Image (cartoon, rainbow, N blue to C red; front, side):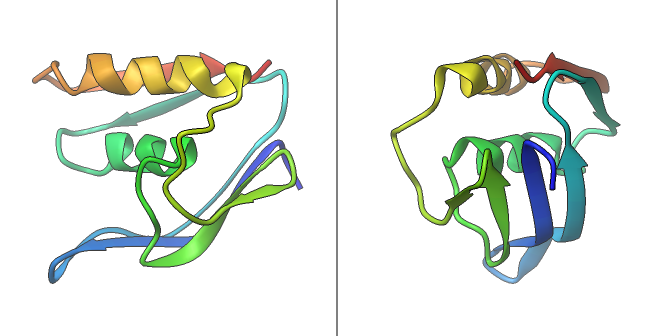
Length: 102
């Protein structure tokens, strides 16, 4: 299991499925990128990793801690991800996200 594990993650808003059965693993100390068109769910996935939203189905595990509900607690190592979300919400073109897990 990686530092961040996303297992069967699904997020629905009203009747719309925004993320459908996502499975990803991020290892500690590596650099990853999230690339996709506007509206494909990049920011929604990062919001789930930060604990800002809850999953309709599935789970996110960070450093063996299951993120099960919206929480204010954000480990310092993940604070940069949350800062990226704020910046991305103000962008309107296709972009990529890269971050290093410390």
